[in-house]
Image (cartoon, rainbow, N blue to C red; front, side):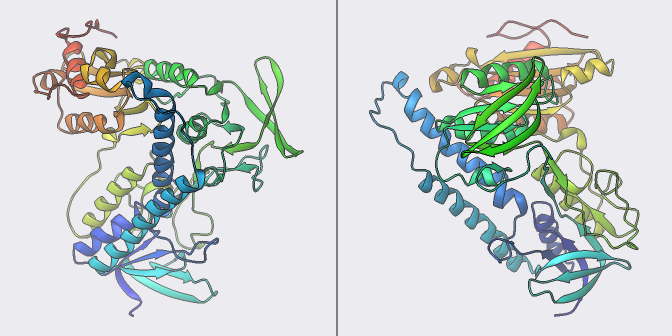
Amino acid sequence: MSNKFDVIVIGAGPGGYVAAIRAAQLGLKTACVEKWSSETGKVVLGGTCLNVGCIPSKALLESSHKYEEAKHDLDIHGISADKVDIDVKTMLERKDGIVKNLTGGVAMLFKANGVTSIHGTGKLLAGKQVEVTDAKGDVVTYEADNIIIATGSKPVEIPPAPLTEGYIVDSTGALEFDEVPKRVGVIGAGVIGLELGSVWARLGSEVTVLEAQDTFLSVVDQQIAKEALKQFKKQGLDIKLKAMVTGTEIKRGLVNVSYKDGKGNQELKVDKLIVGVGRSPVTEGLLSADSEINLDERGFIFVDDRCQTAVPGIYAIGDVVRGPMLAHKASEEGVMVAERIAGHKPQVNYDCIPGVIYTHPELAWVGKNEEELKADGIDFNVGVAPFAASGRAMAANTTAGMVKILADSETDRVLGVHIIGAGASELIAQAVIAMEFGSSAEDLGLTMFAHPTLSESMHEAALAVNGNAIHVANRKRRK
């Protein structure tokens, strides 16, 4: 095998493997470097998303939701289930099977598209060279005309709660509990904390979420966030805001958590503690001193709007650069970079990146929220359609939540869409497409939606923006 390539991608997560496949499809001789798992000793493709992030967490969320539904929500349909049990081992085996299928699929896609898979830990050297150290410690150096850094991110660790096997775990460890803990503590009420907390709460754990901020889901439109907080508390999640963890101690098989809130020093005893306070870029040890690649104080790589670093021909994508840490954002950046290397001129629209929290109900959004528009001094109109007015939602017993559309008061262009409710992760795609094409609220209102569907709530919210809603109360203009 020649050590010279047109493109070398470092990292085989959702950004890296997509970039490698697209580059190969465009006729570029491409290699992708991925390290081996310290636990299995094998190289695993797909990154955090496929192995210990997006996919396995969604598998557990789906299984736990079905369990909760069977146990508590079937009687309204006239269905009796006298005894509902959960076999955690089978649930985890199903999750692992899905992961295996998807990661194996990446390997097959590499083979089908002619991507060379290089196994080892990559390090960027000067002169567009990549040093790869394999599991045996052997080192091989490769070179390329273009290099794409896609090394992803890792869970943030905090000093007051050092990871302790079997007791204090990160998001990866929270996917592997072999039985349902009686009491679970979660540090952080963000996407990770809420999703993982929801899994174990549905299965019967008493879950307490400790959030240091005084605002719940500060990045989310606050009307949606307040509704979410109400729904989560209704489900039994004990969410404590302004709760700063100050220390932990393992004693008599329990985790003693010390935290401070508005009332002073507090204590919490749990069987398991999940640390879900965010993620940080994997850039430590990645760059040689003379690579000329610049990092900020948090370890992110500086890039321009085309994901190129200060060195021409060297790019960085996904969680190691600015913007939200989302698999779909990384994938689209990977495609953009591969196509630009091949001479095309694509661009990622960073104003149309959807965000989703896969709880139940789900939360999803794209564009600006109400607080951001007010801060920017933009006049806007609001249209809200509650799912309680949806016939399809009533039939499915999923009436919690709403669709909220924000549109410019002068041009009527859609500036943001925010959803809480069943299927929000799917419905938000309609909003992304509309905003990508510069749609107005009127455009959406003139579009025909099938009846009865949850999507009709998007239609009704669009009509409400301009006071034309049929089935819900119309909202007045806001500034």
